[in-house]
Each structure stands twice: as structure tokens, then as C-alpha cells.
Length: 306
Ligand code: NAD
Image 1 (cartoon, helix red, strand yellow):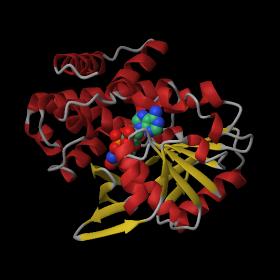
Image 2 (image 1 turned 180 degrees about the horizontal axis):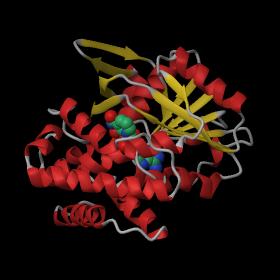
Image 3 (image 1 turned 90 degrees about the vertical axis):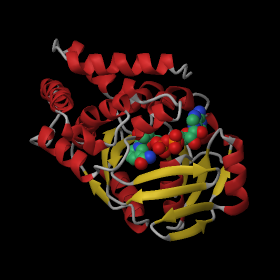
Image 4 (image 1 turned 120 degrees about the horizontal axis):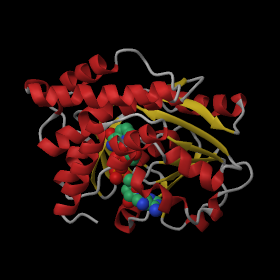
């Protein structure tokens, strides 16, 4: 199978290097020249626990070098998706299947809007990774990859992708309705990410303050109501699950915390912002999610992040 990973950051490099070991013809594509040049010279250097190892992977900034692929895995940040989807013509043939494992909502819609004639898979990843510098990532934790059909794909093609993920230690789990796990993950992110970013605290500290705990609970409850109104089959007790995750990952800093801390844009529009937008479409109020969205937006402006 010929695969391209669009966005060779922390997660793109993790999935790309693991998938390449299954014998797939795999390319990493990114716009960051220094990073791609380092991968071309030394492969992806992966730190995991005490171990450090390198995996050779083909990498380029030039899509025409790759040609049409069977599977195109999108791993840019959600606010980069629309732009990254432009000008993919060298990579796309009639048989190309898209796959997004990005966080938040709206990435799948952007793919459908532009490439709806192609098969599209979606899912979630509970692996964790950090980009350390050009050509180098740290695997923060291994988990599973949920996979499901968004539109146009056959169960055979989904199973083929899942088989490849199995061979690559990416622990796939096929989901009948993939919106369920996408929203399950969203509900957790809605409760933890914006609050930890605004407060600049690690996840566990949310549980130490009555006010923050209240906001976490309200943000998740609002999003849960929106999921119900949209008839998305989410797992039960998302508030309890979010608190448990904040506790278990108590010393970790959320990706939104890290993005704001390092002067980068955040994925707020695809998380709390998207919950508020979906709520409007079904006539539900989401004051906490709306406020969190506005505060992160204001922080982004104050820090002059473009
Ligand atoms: P990242 O910022 O490390 O990587 C994104 C990469 O995309 C960068 O290397 C960037 O240069 C590249 N890029 C930007 N615009 C591009 C374009 N037009 N064409 C090609 N490449 C482009 O982000 P990440 O942490 O790997 O996250 C990717 C997605 O996965 C996000 O939605 C995130 O929420 C989700 N996710 C991340 C983790 C994690 O642990 N990092 C875990 C689960 C899900």
C-alpha cells in the first residue's frame, strides 16, 4: 500500500515511522524544510522512555515527488487543515482514501467539502507524542487507534487499513459509528484543554479548585447535551471520565497549554468553539464553552499569535 502522511509533526512522524516498518511504501510530507532535510539525512529519531532509536522514512516537501497514494493520512493541526487540503492534486487518484485522526471537530467536514468524491475514514488516537526538534520526536505514551468509515469506503478497505495498523503496532479498533469515539475524546478535551491553557497549570491542578472543577463539569455537560441533540452515541459519564483523566495525567500539560505557552495558535476553534457552533445549530446554550473560546481567542491576540 502506498501511503502519504500530510503533516509530519509529532503524530505524523510517529504514525509514519511505525507504518513504514510494516513494509508500506510510505512518505512523510511537511512544509517545514529543516525538519524534512533532517529526516532525509537521519530518519526519524524517536525517544521513548530511556530508549532512543532511528527509523528511516522517505520525506519530502514536494508532493509531485510522491505521486498518487492509496491512503492519505492527515496529521496537521486542525486550524491548518483547510490550507493543507489545497493543492493535493499530485497525491490524489480515484482510489485514494483519506484518513483523519486529528483532534476536535471539523477536520472531517473540511475533507468532505473538498474531496467528498473520495473514500474518507476518520478516528482517534490515544498515542501521545511531542516534537523535540527537526527530525526528532518523543513518544509520550502508546494507546489505541479507533477507525471507522466516514463516507464512501467499503468495510473491506477499512479492514485493510486496520490490518496495516495492526502490523505496525498502532492497535486499531474498528468502530461502527466513529463519531462516538471522536466526541468521547472531544468531551475530555473540552473539559481540560482550555482551562489548563488559560490558567497555565498541569491537568491535575484543575481538581484542586472548586471554581475550576465547576467550569470543567459545566463545559463537559454542555458538550454532552449537544452530542445528544445531534444523536451522537457517546460513552456514559463523560464528566467522571474527564476528571479521572485529569487525575491520571495530573502532571501533564495539555497540548493547548503547550501551544499558548510557546506562543503558538491553539485548536480552540475545533474544540470548545466548535461545540458552541454546533450548539447554535440545535438551539442549545453553551455559555461556558463560548466563554472559554472567547478567552483563548483573546489570549491568542494578546500574545500576538498569528
Ligand atoms: P504538530 O504541530 O507537531 O504537527 C503538525 C505538522 O503539520 C507540523 O510539522 C507542520 O509543519 C505541518 N504542517 C502545517 N501546515 C502544513 C501543510 N500545509 N502541509 C503539510 N504540513 C503542514 O501537531 P501534532 O501534535 O502532531 O498534532 C496533529 C494532530 O493530532 C492535532 O489535531 C492534534 O490535536 C492531534 N493529536 C495530537 C496528539 C499528540 O500527542 N501530539 C495526540 C492525539 C492527537
